[in-house]
Structure formats: structure tokens, C-alpha cells
Length: 245
Length: 244
Image 1 (spheres, rainbow over the protein chains, first blue to last red):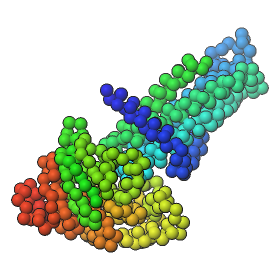
Image 2: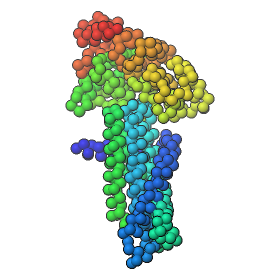
Image 3: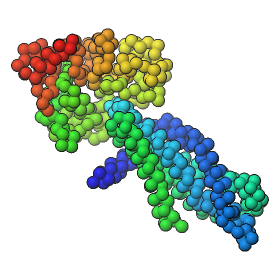
């Protein structure tokens, strides 16, 4: 029963957000701030995640494959495709569920319990337009950019690990990656990151916006936002794979 | 004018109060008093539809508040300023920007005009020179005064005060009370004050609404309060005087 109530509340919040999306002047300033917080400030952690994911994937792929049977370039093919189709988007999203999702839910939750949201409403503001719309919109627009960064860094990390560990030369790694590079895989990755951006920012905004019960309530909202974001990222990943691949 | 008509509110199975009715005339200062947890703040939040009742109506200048569309409600809300219990200042911006916030979004004033208005409002609440301070650096009393400056910056018709003196030392409480009186006398503001501080009530209010036992237990002018035969109101006043 509680789950149905929350689903209704989430749908209502999204409906109000969608209805007020044209009130650009209300959230313009916040939108640019969120571009910086969600996009620009996430670049270091996304680069780090991408590099290490690619590097580990290269080492593990080489370990599991017998390169006497397969050409060494297959490592580049496997790493390149895995990064582009799956890992850059999903691992990036899981990291961002912690970084971006937790920040959004904590920020909005604190605003709720300290009556800052009530203060906005009492002034005649539409608090959903002012607070939720820029966060969700920024997530939708910035996650694909972060996906591209993660993918580039993942392949670079793989190439670096393969070369430094003496598994295969850089040229061979890139040859393998190019052989199995299909532009539609990138489109698939971008679509996934677009969906993940929406899932994480909307769930986190929802949990924060309706937080209650002081510091403990904000803590609970943040935990729920992070856990639910991760679960729905994985669920939507599966659904998109089933639908689009 | 604000008319509260047969208002009832519950949270789940917990009844907060029922059939609350009274009127607040223009320019009047009304104090809503009662024990902690009797639903004073809940009642205050109904006055500009931050909360909705189970039954009843609030009529603001002839507009039935709970029948308005959200766009209409936002217009009505601009007639109000609210001083929240903890100030509800936006912690991502400094003191000056908190006070300037409504001006930036609801007026077409130029920067120099905004600066003048904000400085005047800060002066009114005795916070000259505090504009650059982050809100985290403000004391409880200063936060309330900044909240008050922000509440009146758009020159509202009604100001709602939620426990304006709670948690403050007697001297700061006195300053806040003086400000409330000054606002209603000089800015022609209708004030509704939630408090359980009888000292404040006697200093600022003209009318009193006493919430007790899940209903409006007593309503009348301050002068009529002591001659009241309502035993729970008399107990409340007696307890307050004992504390003083």
C-alpha cells in the first residue's frame, strides 16, 4: 500500500515538473548551477572510474583468453565493446547514484526539514519548478556527456594497461577495438545514460523533496535514494538491453 | 480579511483540531496560543495553503483558498510574508541575497534599487552591515530578524509569525516583539502570531485565539482574556505568569 502511495506521489511530482518545464526563467540560474555540479564536478570521478574499469577489464580479459588461439587484438575488441555498450554507462551511473543522487536527496531533504521549501512556496514560488526541474533536466543532459568521458577514459585505461603489462601493443589494441566498433553501440550507450540520468535525479529529487523527520529523516531519504537509484539503474539497463539489442 | 470557517485537520487517525472558526480583520494583530503540540503551526500553515484541511475553508479577501488553482494560489501567497520558526533561510546564499531573493524573482527592480530596499529592510531589523555574512554565521535571533526582513521585503498585506521569540534570550525576544509592533503600526500589516509566550501576547496582540483540547477553546480581545471563565485558558495564563 505504501509502495503504491509513493509511486503515485512520484508520478505527481514528475507531472508537476513536466508541466512547469516551460517556466525557464524560474529555474535558469539553478539549471546552470546543476550543470556544473552534476556535469563538470563529476568529471574527475568518472575519469577515474573509466580508467580503472578499462584497465581491470583488459587484465582480466587477457587472463581469461588464450592468445595462442585468438589474436591478441581480440582483447581490444572485447574491452572496447564492453566499455561502450555496458560498462561506461552502468558503472558510471552507479558511481553517480552515490555522488549526484546522494547530494540531491540530502540537499532537498535538508531544505524540506528546515522549512526552506515551505518558505519558497509561501513566497509564491513553484518549488518543483525551482528545485526539481533543473536537477532532473541537468541529469538528463549531463549523463550522456559523462558517459562519453567514461567510455573514452575506459578504452584509454584498457589500452594503457594492455601496453604497460606487455599484453599487447597499443596499435593492436586499437585495431581490435576499431574492428568491433559500431556507431549504433554508442547510440545505445547514450540512450542508456540518458535514461540513467533521469532515473537517478528524479528518484533522488523525489526522496529529498518529500523527506520528513529531521536529520534522521534526511539520512533515511538519502539512503533510500541511493539504493533505489542503483536498483532502478540495473532494472532499466536490463529492460533497455531487452528492448534495443 | 482572513476568515477561517469550520476548519478540521487530522494526520492519519490523529485529530489535530476540529471546527475551528474565527476572523482576522485587516490591520489586526492576532496571537494564536496554546500548549506545545496543540497544532498552532499546523493552523498557521493552512492560512496560505501550505497544508490542506480535511474539512472547512479559509477565505482570504473573498477568495476561497482551497478552491483556487495553483496559479491563483501563488498570487494569493504573494500577499503573505512568513517568518518561520528557524528562519528558513536559504543556506546556499548569504544574508543579503536571502532578503533580496523575492525581489529578484518577483519584481523588475534594477540592482541599485534592490540594494537600497534590502539595506533598508536590514536596517529595520537592526542588521546593518550583516549582508555579507553567510547564514550559517548568524545567531538564532539574527536568523529570525533576517527571516523577518525577507518576509516584509515585498510589502505583504499579511505576515505570519511562527514562534517568533522561541529559543531567544529575553532581550532579543523583546526586540523581535518591538519589531512586530512596529511592522503592524507603520507598514499597516495584518499579523498572525503563533506563540506560547504570554509576555509576547500581552505586548503585541489585539486578539487572541486559544487552541486547547483539539478545538478553538477561546477567542476574544486581549483585555477580555483575564475576565474569561475558560478554566484551561486561565490555567495557561497562570502557568505563563508563574514562569515569568
